[in-house]
Image (cartoon, rainbow over all chains, first blue to last red; front, side):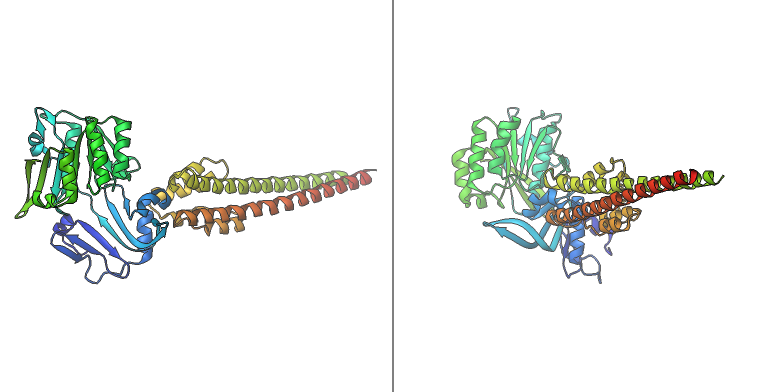
Length: 280
Length: 159
């Protein structure tokens, strides 16, 4: 790749599209990996899938069906191609047309400064992380899960259950998290949140349940049931700030249910991210 | 002296025939084992959803054909693409038809494609095994006839 090291270090994604040269997604935008690079072929994408799955695509068919693959090392490969739809659901993917390799990065210690704000009287309070796409909701969630699970000088260790529906938080690969989610964390991945939460509640007796991206009323109902069982919750939701959150239909349900007590809003000031905690 | 010569020729012939029978039996067992290994691979994919490198490593424990699968596993450890490792491992197989069948078995693609290819190769090996078995039985009968005829001739000569 004809890309300087500083750009390689900042790369967020590698994008491969059949018939086009590979590109790299940087914070400032997408650039060509090589000025006159060879066009990506379908065989390249097939080989990529074979390499990631250890020549065993069938063992990853559930996530391929959903359009992604989790790779060793915390990388995530998003796939596009021709979907084979049966009874209204995608059953498989063929004729791959593009692949997006998302470079997994974790920021260990990111949540350390927030610890004091999400505890009251020595107990964790259910918290909701708000941010628009690309500001690091999942990264913060992952580090909060790690902190709550491992504990620290100020925070006691908790039994955390993680419902990782899209496999982005723990990036599980053959039963092992590829990113740090703490030593007292049980992960249930590739399962819809509304199904995963009751399973975790019954199966692993958690103190805290963490989920990424609340998107539906079913998720909230499952969370309410968990909260009624005395379990604390940690979740993320797409919203730039409190005002945008208030415009979402889900917000009124959230308020009625009184599941969450605090919000953590991620904002970008200049180049740096700030974290603001508020009572909900 | 003449009788001794005949006995030696006959013993030599019997020894060569026996060695040939042993070699054919070994080939038959090898073919049977290869077929069973391919069927096992198919089962590992269909019912156990095991990873292909793990399934191949399991087949390396087989007494006769294990070495070929071990060579594939070694190739994978050296990061040689599976198809290349597979083809080069089975290049060492002496039986031409079985070698070509296995080398042409593609292990890339989705579940249906891999299982279909494994099944087709296993069927082909099964057919080869049956043909060879029938041929061997026929030749064994022929060998037996030759041995009895020679023995009869020896008795006549000795009389």
